[in-house]
Length: 73
Image (cartoon, rainbow, N blue to C red):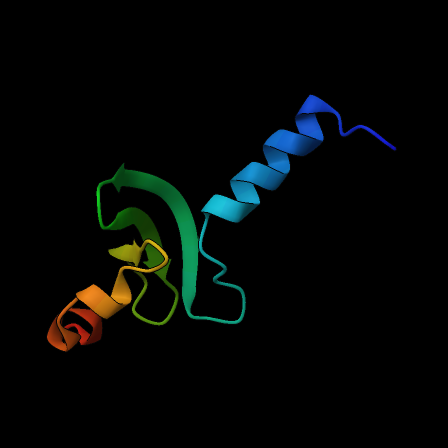
């Protein structure tokens, strides 16, 4: 068995907690909040060239959330 270093483990934990935005118009800047339903990230929209808040729901929460909240405005 091989053990992971603390640095590798911290990196893997960070990857598992952040949304995967590659191939999208959004660039992750930082996590700005977390609550019972999910996490909120500050992102930059490359097309509009402005910063936005992106909320990512925790796994298992989408079935409890009204559809209009998932779609946005």
